[in-house]
Length: 444
Image (cartoon, rainbow, N blue to C red; front, top):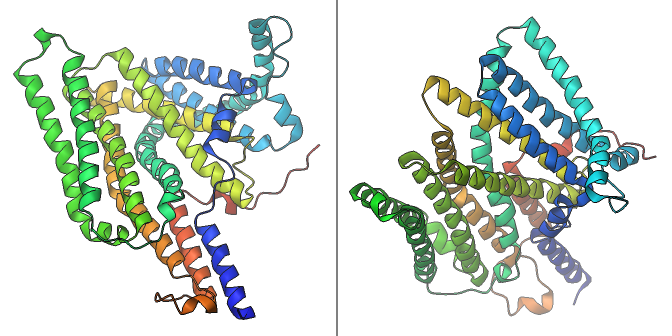
């Protein structure tokens, strides 16, 4: 084997590793960070203050304005705290240590006050700034709540984007999805399995929420029409997706790994779509219980924040970024959490004032936005994985292997260009915050 062939083979192997590189910051690492007892007080603070500010927003117009100031200040304060934790003194200060000493609850309460002091002090300072601006510009009393409410649409679409970036990248990097062996059979097997799984899930969701949770007296012609219509709509959306993407799906399914990814990603994403459609259907055409709805939205908020933070943190850690790190992931999550809760509070208040809306209607609309966004970006996930397999399959090979390889080869320079293009496509879901020129802190 010549030195040139050896060098090209090595570059091809390196390129392939980069295409399917494992995250240095796994989902397990993130979950361990989020449930760490040393940062538990901040999660408790999120629950308490979000509930108080939500109630304040539903009162007078003045209460709505100051509730918006509170949510914005808390969100910005925890974003600043996330960055400041790069300093060792701040990193220790905002965590609770020594909970085993004495009474657990007494120790937790006392030490929580210390851990809260920095983000709350930043919140007060930012709140004063917003209040001064409010006094100098009366229009801010209307624009602050409206601006925060508009974030609800961004959050709803962001749920789909974070799901695609997190779940899609994880499935694409699995061993089974990397298999570049050619296959035959088209997409019939993929489509049949997909439709059986998603169709069965759709019927199960309709039965659970349309019939199982109701008494016999509550089930009538309206119930039958509502949920049978839902089944036809949800399954029709899946059939339409296969129809419009059939050419791309045939190309992706030409390899064993591509077919596996098309199936696993298709099922995962469309189950998520169907769940959002079910939630929207219930909120728009029925009256779900307030308790159940709040619980479901709380679970969704946690799920969304976790996926968003994982997608941002894993990329930042892998690239050595300064902003999103393993140590500050929770604080970024809290910043997003306060922003998400604030947008829900504001848009609920606004729809109640101007459109006689309700929390259920607002949430239903948000679920529709998420489902539609995920359907729109489904093609991008398939296309990216197909490109990864194509580039990897066309990588240069050693001279001793060229006699048995009939597939075209790519020069190393082409490999690098394609890799950079794919990385750029993958990162288009989020702003590239790591390119900001932020000085390195001096650790104590």
